[in-house]
Image (tube, rainbow, N blue to C red; front, side):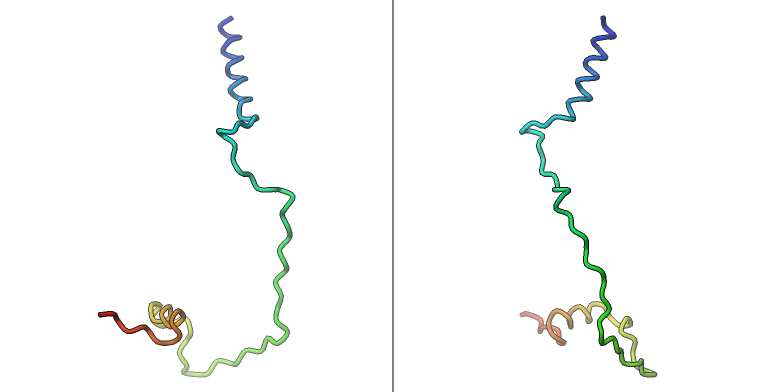
Amino acid sequence: MKRNMILAVAALTALSGCGTTSVFDRERPDEFAVTRAKPIEVPKDFTLPPPQEGAPRPQDGDTKTQVLDAMFGGTAPAPRS
C-alpha cells in the first residue's frame, strides 16, 4: 500500500511537467518560423590594394584611440571642464 502510494506520487510528479498552467507557462520559440540564413557572398569587385612596405599594420596600435576614432570620426572629443 505504501509502495503504491509512493509510486503514484512519483508518477504524478513526473507527469506534472508535461502540462501547462498559467503560473508556469512561458514563451516558447515557434519551431516553424525558422528560416535558413543566406549564404555568404564574395563581392564581385574583390580587389584589395597590396600592402606597402614599412606601412603600419592595422591591427597594431592603441585600441582606445582606434575606438575613439571610430566613434567620433577621427578625432577624440575635447575633455569637458
